[in-house]
Length: 434
Ligand code: DLL
Image 1 (cartoon, rainbow, N blue to C red):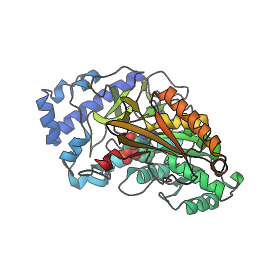
Image 2 (spheres, protein in one colour):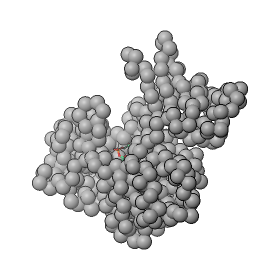
Image 3 (cartoon, helix red, strand yellow):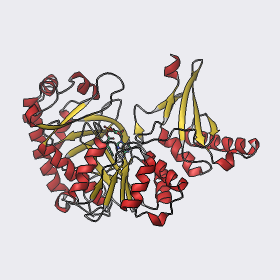
Image 4 (spheres, protein in one colour):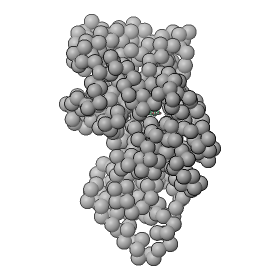
């Protein structure tokens, strides 16, 4: 269902006019209210009056995660603290966490966007929505929560973890829509099977999965195991949280809420804008946010933009599934590898279980990649010769598709840590030995 038809199906011309008006207001706002933005714009010799068309956006300087750290905690806020009604923050494993703030109107906008996302997955007032994203400083739980209430669904704010209890409530409450990370959905599916719960006992129809990269092959796996429609949802705290972009049931890219955000794809090294259809780094400018607007925010996420109209009727441009973050990319002997590429190979071969991890190490001056992947109990107790054959087959496939030499290690069931939130797909041992 299309939640906000006038906005989501607006003609491209009307949308462009709306975007320009909103962009101009946002640039004015940051220039006057945020010294750090003003200084950057002055250094680039651009003022709000220079933004006369949407193309002029490219005259504005980029904003980086480092800018958030440098202005910790509230230096980039464009509203006085008395108007900020909510704070969220990222964990920040190194240095200061990144903090974002929302005004009441921002919270309303955000709820509207997560409502669009849930409606796109088929949610309505009859739905029972179980939210397995973490509640707290992470934007996943509360972000989806407000949208779920807005569509009028009955919300089960269970947060992440407590897997058996999740499944008991899913059965007892008749959950129809599950919201969590795809890796947690897989863990839930596995546990449902282990608990011997028949699929007919569950009313599950759809899942909205995101907050981490996942492949088409993983979608098929989840749709098959849970017998649901699996929808990809994308967002990041700096821009808003979940709801920045969402798939429609056509499942051919995620519609970006262009009445609130302007996307660009750039060459991550040169910063040059790339045309539609080319892969590069996603950059977002918010055009309605009050508390924490961002101008040309470098997401470090790799994707592609598509402008062709979609069968669903929505006119907003689509982004391809995120293949990974530039910071998740591992470089093995000069070849760039994303965990999603490995996932895609493993799952399409279908010889193993869908639980895997990449282990990076260094031998002398060379980086090495090992792919650990679980096999079933039955297979693990098979002859060594058979296991070696499977290892070699996967190894060959990885080598021919990705161009890297990886050592494949088949491991016992349950050896790889299950995820209740964002999965950790890479273990980098080089950092431990340095
Ligand atoms: O993960 C917001 C979110 C919550 C999105 C729930 C979807 C569902 P952050 O913790 O700030 O916010 O992390 C943002 O997660 O830059 C991407 O690298 C990654 N990410 C988010 N959604 C997707 C997705 C939330 N659908 C970072 N596919 C982003 C791939 C995703 N990566």
